[in-house]
Length: 363
Image (cartoon, rainbow, N blue to C red):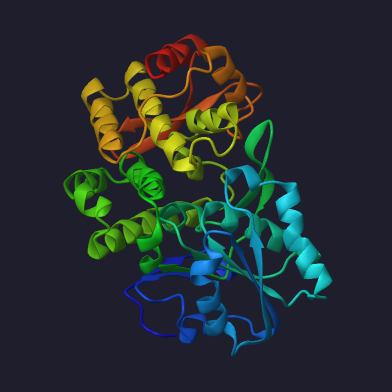
């Protein structure tokens, strides 16, 4: 395999794989060396990303497969559903694709989740590769094997744990991201500091302007460190039986925002950014961290261009939606909270206290 700027290994025994991070990777044929070769490859992309990168990826794969096809899905979180998933199955079946077919997820988190879930289900499992083109996907959703679609009642409620064979994170694709999408990805970078690496939060605070300016060195470091943290957590708890739940910092509040507004009104990262502000405040109200640390997180989220106040759905509606969260147990909502800078845990909290947090951070 060709040398890349950075390689991070996900250690999961026979399901182990590499995350390749660097510039100009996507279109290099040797980057895909060692992956299964056969008759068919199916690139799954969307209407935004496919015109930019699908042909380049198809050219790189053409020497490995007799047929390289592309299925283009509608773009947006609102399309992370059964009808869109069926478009992938429709193409696989219409083309007579067998169980040696390899799927390539070319796009952001929605494409990655849909493709992974399709791969997990088609003929009870075919291999797939993640080729994430957004910052959010490169630092979080493409890594770790969580695949899913949304249900009207809750986000990511129908899915499977199914690991890719490789992740190819080409930082050049971030040049085409709209500023709003870049900010959304930064939410998932910021997340890793409070929960796992206090020094990373210091680094983000110092280098946030460089990240917003898309400085290649800064982005590469942020992606690498984020993936290293996620690799360590996933390697210890692949199926979220315990430790992996800390990666959902801000997500209980954030998923409620997404479901309450309707998927796609806010970007996932925007909802998570706001959710982290709420979760940090909850941590302070529980006496785990001081108010200054919670305020620091809020200031960084604001500087990244993310919302720090949620929509006024009403505390009752937030609580209703959060009871559907995957971390909830017997109807009790459980939150990822900060026990100390760089260390997180999952805790229950009194509804009244949670309602106070919601009222303080909605507008």
